[in-house]
Every structure is written in structure tokens, then in C-alpha cells.
Length: 352
Image (cartoon, rainbow, N blue to C red; front, top):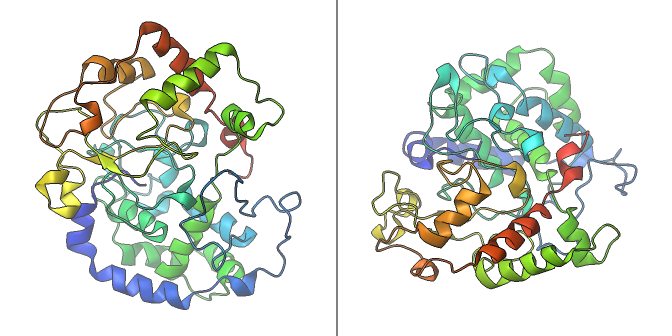
């Protein structure tokens, strides 16, 4: 859902932004929270802030997740009838077993097997994300599904037709009524439902998290400790903090010339050519292939690139001018450490 080029969306569908913002401003979930427990033990749909994470970027305090909203969002996430050909849903490119990344394709595949230009990344921890898409073309989570629905290479369905379809399916009326008190489906409520589902996709219970928090199951081996040290010395300037991304846009030396301009498609600045959003490394072992175009099939290929494959260009990140100097032993330790970022509870959570 967050892997397509935003530029086409911005140029042809910008008129929808004002309409959606007005509708979303009018919508409210506060009236639908009366049956929600205040404890996660009895309410698994409740958003729980990890103590070691930064504050959410999404206004969850005023837009809380409800069970009804989450269940509706989950249904929409798997709804193939939101595609023109009735056979592609968001979950096609975002599978739970792979941390909601694409388990099969380097480049996303949409209706009629149309091949997109970018890889479908994982969807974990979107509540803490500042900008979305590989180029940062969307700055609010509520608008992310719109791009996937209308994209020619993904679901290829005009937004107005998507709303009309949902209104024609009798099973949706009671779901929207329960979640939002709405008698009809609107774009604002549809997008809010999507967001409630995606906001709950929090991954913060890996072995690494238990190590940092001093919890049971978080004892690191000597190799894992060495790997963490190698990571902090060589990788943490970009993959920083507990999200394992500084959420900036950087050219990491994949190419000397750019078929995909990346961030420059949004800013129209030549200084942003070849720059893409720094991805999180959480659940890295489950989210192959890697990079914005899925060119690398394994972590070994990624590390080889940073050690000896950096392509020089005017926008290359300065920290990579001389590549990353890692010994063979450090590489092996680093790979062991990266495995500690896998959150098996997240990958197996039943409500997802």
C-alpha cells in the first residue's frame, strides 16, 4: 500500500485531498468508544505505547482505535472488490508472515499482473512514521490507502467508484454504523477504518526489545553483543533509535544515474535525486527482498553492497563516500544481531 510513486497521485487526484480532509475533520470515533476496555489484557485492539519508542506521529489520543473500527479496517485490508478487477487487495502485497511486506515480488504486482516500479515494504509501526511511501509523498497515514486504490499499477479503481461499491455491499452498512455511527460509507470513514487497522500494527517485542528493557528472554550471546556494537558503529547513523530508522531520505549508492528519481519526484530538487526513505530494520530477516526496487534478495547481498558496491554520484550520502568498512568477522556478528530484531509475536498475532 505504500510503495507506489506518489507523483501520479498528486497530479491527477489532488482535488480529493481537500474533500477528504474536510470529511475527516467532521468524522469522530469518540462516540463509539463506550464499550472499549482501558486495559490491553482484556482489549487486544487497544493501542499500547511501547515505553522505549518515540511518541506517535498520529493523533491517537483524539482518534483512538476501537474494536469496531479495527475489525472494519481489517476487512477492508483484505477486500479484493476495492480493485478494478475484483482480485487484488492490500494484503496481496502486505502479508503478516513477512511483517506485512511482499513475500514474493521485488516489484509490486497489481491488477492484470501489472508490475509497479517499487517494492512493497513492511507496514509495522506506522503510528510512529512521519512520511510515507519510498519518496515521502504522503504525510498522513489516512491518505496512504487512497494511493494504492487508485494507482494504475496496483488496484486501479477511482476513489468514487470504490465508495460506491462499498455502499452497494450490504455487509458493510452495519460495520460502518457500528464503527462510526454512519448510515453510508464515505471516503473519510473508509480511510479512518484503514488507519485504525494499520495503527495497531506495532512491532516492539523482539529479542532486542527484551534485551534493551531487561526482560526475560532478552539475554544476548557474545556474538549478538558484538553484532550490536558493530551495528552502532557502522549503521546507526541512518538506522537510528528504537524504530531503526531516522526517517530521512538518502541516496545509499545503489546507482550512479537514476531511472527512479525518488524523493526528487516530490521536491523537484536535483539535490534529492536518487534519495529514498531510510527503511526500518525491524523484522529484517522476514522482509526480503530489499531496497526500494527489491534488487537484493538477501542480507548478505545488502552488506556486500555497503562494503564494496557503492556507486558514486553527486547526491550520494556523505557517510558512504568510502563505503562501510567491515571485517568478515564483523559481518557475521552483525547478521546474528539483525536476527534479534525479529518480533515473532507480531508475526503471529491472531487479531491481525
